[in-house]
Length: 281
Image 1 (cartoon, rainbow, N blue to C red):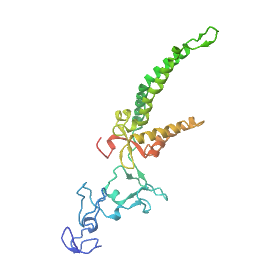
Image 2: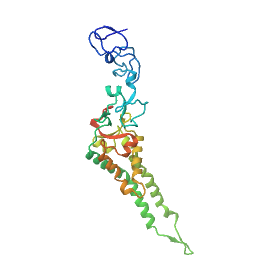
Image 3: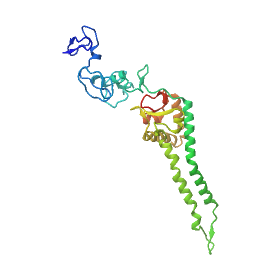
Image 4: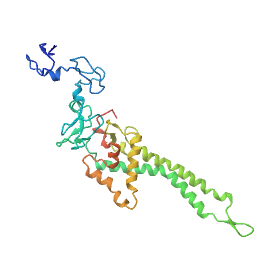
């Protein structure tokens, strides 16, 4: 037997409403409550987790289900293979433990609002200028090396055969240095969206960031590298470059959340910082 938390009227396990005051016992007095965040268990009747302040729920509320058909799935499944509906527990929906996720009228998962396209374009332009600036030392050394290579005249030995003196191979040093310094812009291209809080220099200037949708955290350098790699592979498909180069820009324009192929591969999305509902920026 338990007592109603409002009027102290006794009730038995399974009672949905208090017979005296009408309180919903299923919501206000939980049996075997558990925290939806840390999964710690508490005594019957406890309402809040003393570790993170989350409102407690029941084990059944933590089972991931399709928001469309209600089919239960194991942890880790994101979408229902039958109808494409988002798979998430009722507790997460009710207590909004995943603040980046909402649902549209059809029950599909809807991530953060689509970022401003103008801001994304300017951010990409700024990042391109940063990459170009980092490339200048490499370009200068490469030009010097090529100039030295093409302008050096051959010498002739006593038999009339051409040869290069050892001093004439100095251009190789410049070319090698140029190749090594090219690692600077290349490294920036790979990790730029994992800098700071998921913000490249251009995105930070325009108030944008990239968020990892699986755990609602800023993009990491690893995810940034994956995004760049996927985009690069799409744009170098042999004989189809003219067509494939338009795939990602079209996806940014056409998709509801502005995600391109690289975002789907890395489970990321470009968002505006003001919309981020996670750790402080």
